[in-house]
Length: 410
Image (cartoon, rainbow, N blue to C red; front, top):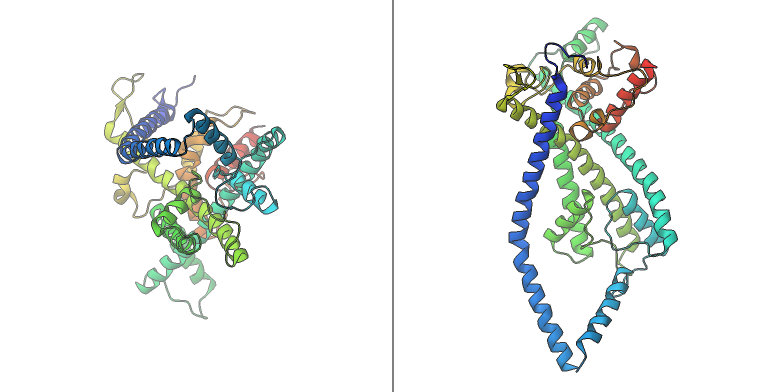
């Protein structure tokens, strides 16, 4: 294997170290979460079991029932419960509207679990239906993220331009402005890049507003508490989908059509917004990992005397103010350095390139934030920008860039 520079490890070991550190942090995060939830929920579980045992004993004694027969009857009810049969009257599960609600939870990967196919044909069809539907929905979420970033970048650039005009850095618009003056104004803003933290804050505020409005609707129509409604919104919008609380399940509502349309709108917008927020948060997590790697300075066992340090273009939280005011980097060098010497002709997309940093590449995202804000196309420094594969953000952008490189090599 050819060495990169003076070190035979290069970015490969850096990415391995980042991957291992992220894995260890996730395991630690899971252990901490398990400890907290066990402390909070386990006493309630024990109390519920004791209460049910008392009720079962009293009921069997009161009506002189055999315990084994009663347990058998309860098992039959559990089977009926899984088929959607409840004590209270609920909406039909498998009429057209109920089936439409079900396929919506499938393709969005929410999967509440209150409705599941019971027939063999339904289970087989679900496998192929979900395979295509989930892939198409993930593509839709990525395209939605691309348009959200485009709008946010345009708005942030406009606000930045107005702020600079107020400070007198840029001339005010006037009808007598010459073309040279406009070009100078565009050049002065060409190097500006919106901050990832601003995008994350805006998406967070949008998610909170959508969740609060949806919770107000659910608490008034479903009769849930407001905190329970907020809990449902997060579980549904993040596609966790426990299924302990599910909206629009009664047989009838007041203003039923309006409520179901509003329910569909809030879930759609909430899922898209939370998905975009998760992608942007993953960028910040990657920055934290880079910062931790720099602090640890893991030694390279193949190159004595050298430490495993992040690449020169990596952005760490501690170096934000020493380099630029907003977190922004030049990404052409990053993309070139990551592909030179590692891609053979006709090579498939590597899992590392596709899955790195939770399918979001900081360099690509920052470059696209800059381009969409400035309104200029991607520079044509290499031919792989013009072969029909370029464009997109997040996982879509990473895969398109890699497909472009592969097609050029061929």
